[in-house]
Length: 510
Ligand SMILES: C[S@@+](CC[C@H](N)C(=O)[O-])C[C@H]1O[C@@H](n2cnc3c(N)ncnc32)[C@H](O)[C@@H]1O
Image (cartoon, rainbow, N blue to C red; front, top):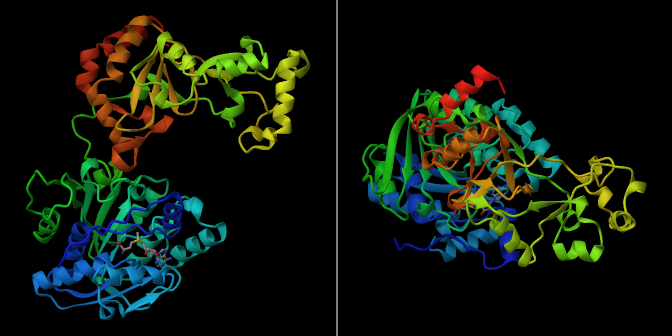
């Protein structure tokens, strides 16, 4: 079959927004073929895709059935009939899509059980789903599967649950899903339900350079699940080569043979996999006895609720005539700190470039005690409706800003392979683009040794164990998760921090 580049890249912002609403991102052929290969096994049968779109899985089914000489037929659903026009343009015949029903899979799903389900479900996050639909989704999954999930589960999660409930005994399902499926708040409950009632055969993750959806801000995974008795082990793989035929061949070999240049895989204990998170590699000796929270505590940077009002440039402050004593020096964007240290020079360069570095810092003193210029500025803020803004409305008075001690270290927590600790030599306060990292002792030696630990490559690589993963290798780390960061024993030993810690404990507990 002719290969087409079936991944759809929206051309404009508006087009991208439309695609987002319907979750229309097409699966590339090399992924679709591997997934279909699994659900067809050596039997073939009726392939069901609950979200057919431009028909990537139907094309794959025709090819795989031909290669393996299997009997097959195609059926499915999609909410959007226009997508099927594209399916024809991409080479499917009218005959191929005649059993596709136009409708909502979740609420109008088929009555009969199915043997082979494959999908790239619409990735519609929970904040794009109305409260009414959310309630309906919850009720439906409670009734059909007996599972009640946290409200942050997106539509794709309900596609998975609904599809699993439709699987006949011995049937197979392959879904390509974003990593939040196993990193989200709801994921523990979801996977407990799945692994109690089904057999998780394999999970495939992708190295950033092999992502099936480059340029899309998600980290996709494929789940291979069968309606068999649950097993205690599953196969976990990382695909390192894009567009590789090897993925299909590895699936065809029963997840047992692959060239390590394309796919690395291992057998994992289900309990370990669920504990670590299915999107993450197994915990190895790199984890060790200590976590970062043994040495530091972590607080997020200051959230102002209106940076344009609270976070100003030197020039703006001069023009406003508000005395500088009402401000603290601050950094807003991770991009503003390219290096691993914020020095006075970093700050001076930002000021020269006209970047804001002054954060209004008011502690809720009596309004009448403020200088006239500051009072006027605050009254102007009221006229702009700032006190009614969501975050600001919770403060009393509304202009009282969050107070942070100066953190010796910052952590840039959302980045594309650029998550890192930063030494705060310039003694600034960070905004929410950063986390504040406070060592448990202010002793100079302790802080020095800690710095060695923070930027050690083995420490940094462990971030993947606790962060939420997005596209292109980006990870996002919340404060509590950062405190759970495992610090490898070799890194601890090399730093001499434990000796130091013991010394403190003998002297005075901090
Ligand atoms: C991510 S695309 C995948 C399409 C195709 N199967 C593929 O893999 O390339 C998801 C599809 O789901 C459809 N969709 C969105 N909401 C749906 C719903 N509630 N029921 C059925 N299909 C839906 C969209 O129109 C879109 O075509």
